[in-house]
Length: 366
Ligand SMILES: Nc1ncnc2c1ncn2[C@@H]1O[C@H](COP(=O)(O)OP(=O)(O)OP(=O)(O)O)[C@@H](O)[C@H]1O
Image 1: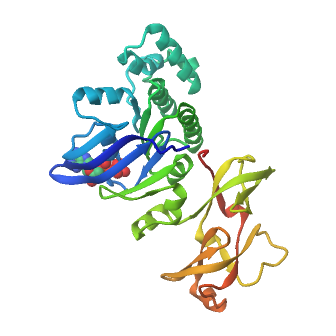
Image 2 (image 1 turned 30 degrees about the vertical axis):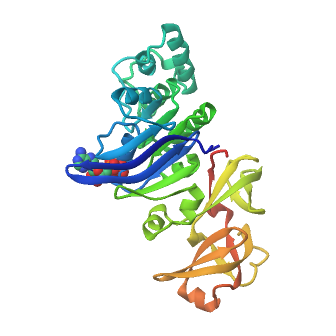
């Protein structure tokens, strides 16, 4: 749960590379226990911002503060870095055993041998590496190397953790398993985290806040649902893909038919989420149909909701309808259907979509 206590604050950050300004961030805050994802196209400045927040990027201007204290001297930066850990896209492991790799940050921090041993074993077990402790870190698969890199970062029990595409190029089940492990430890230990990712599902699943960047600037930030459903401009709308994202809670799961409570109504979906879990229901506008009468009794469509058209906009060959069904939905209709159904803003309609067209994503517990 996000508490409104600022742990890290960056003000008036400007970074130049090769005589060109690549970052211009008037203000960025990270709150205690908060998980923030930075998303944006290639070259937007995500990695540069991440490095700047760690105090690892030369800057033209900017003030970095930790818990209200400005970080000024080299000694301040060193002290701050002791509270941080980072996991990069390339694991960059030392040419020694897995054990030594996980122990490395603890040795640097001057921890005693016995304490190092118990701490390392704890994190090797958490990342399913205990049986491999004495193996060379040079001979690992991509997934194993990422596990070592995560165990090494979490072993120092940081207050802040920074991830730059830590799961790129991993197969989906490995990626899923690692993000779940990482998410659990972050929450259990009350760590504040910043993640750079190109995977919007990952950003949705893990984040309290999503920050969209473009051309070295912060274009929009907010809760995942706010950013995905209410992009502030065309750039963000195109970038986030314009799905409707609804926050809900699973009420039942019968043979993987999952009912999700959303704004006092139930949406039928399929998946493996369990009752009580917080989820997002993601629905693409092309999967939402609009009719004037309720659908026929016998249909495979599991979801049918009365609603009202609140906004109509042109999208070239088709029209985009915003619907209020007690929750927000977006639907695309062809111009032909639009005319045949005589649609207009304020018109009562029925919106329908199949359970199988809902993409269910587990949400970070509030
Ligand atoms: N050494 C450098 N010299 C000049 N420009 C650089 C240098 N390194 C990065 N840049 C530029 O800085 C900008 C931001 O780069 P950065 O790596 O932070 O973006 P990013 O959002 O992380 O991109 P990606 O998603 O591709 O990793 C880019 O335009 C990049 O070309």
